[in-house]
Image 1: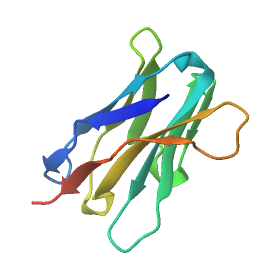
Image 2 (image 1 turned 135 degrees about the vertical axis):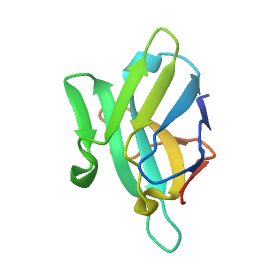
Image 3 (image 1 turned 45 degrees about the horizontal axis):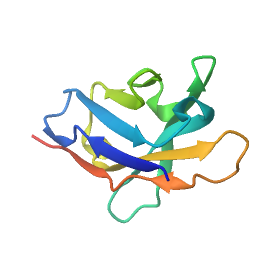
Length: 118
């Protein structure tokens, strides 16, 4: 059974940075595609970034250059470094996992709130 636990959210001023972490509990972490999604109030959930191996990494176009996803297979961790945060980045951020080749993400964390405000 896979469990995901996010941490690192909080309140940050515009222009600031946050690093989200996601701890993966289960087996064969390296076999999973790991992703970050976010859902802002009144909006649909959107894919922020996903990674399987460094050469197979996806970013939502508007976030390229500000957000960086990374993973540490030795520690079963995935991270999202977020720089130059703006109020429109305010959302609940979710960590998700799926087996490579699956269409849908099968496993989700509980989410961590990120609020960007002065």
